[in-house]
Length: 160
Ligand SMILES: C[S@@+](CC[C@H](N)C(=O)[O-])C[C@H]1O[C@@H](n2cnc3c(N)ncnc32)[C@H](O)[C@@H]1O
Image 1: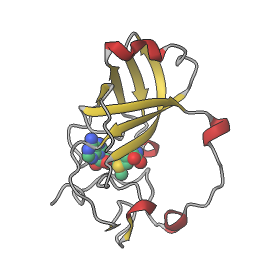
Image 2 (image 1 turned 180 degrees about the horizontal axis):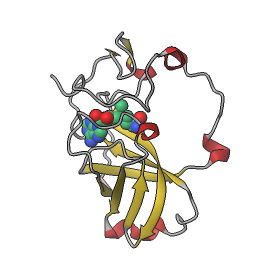
Image 3 (image 1 turned 90 degrees about the vertical axis):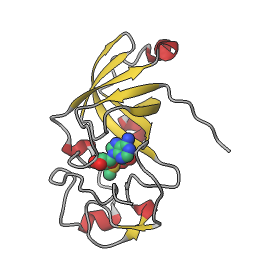
């Protein structure tokens, strides 16, 4: 049994799942605000200076999951853990967004593929030295015809 408590809430222009970008790579023009609850504000100290941050959050609108699932970038079923599908046994999302500003307990971010009012679980700094592996193979996604820049979410994960 694991219990997480939300540390804030993500405000986003995407009011519903359908039509949202499927990754930050396709969400350059969308800004949002990450509201960190005041009791956690001190933990934002020193975040200025990081160009990008990693948001970890609860896919609170997701119910259930399929271990074989059709991801947004393909029309054939893929193993769930080879995808970023939002319906997962532990519905946790991860988005690396650009940090535009920090004002008290509010972070202004760009590249939002997250639905409005999504509960925030954690924030980590994106550190190229730790997190970037340019040229890494990406399995079936390397072979996919579609890209995260060109695709918006349809309703495949919103139906029962
Ligand atoms: C494919 S997921 C990728 C999310 C994240 N970048 C990741 O890799 O974990 C992005 C899609 O999840 C859906 N989504 C966003 N916020 C959600 C939420 N709070 N609950 C359920 N689905 C959500 C939207 O349809 C969005 O287009």
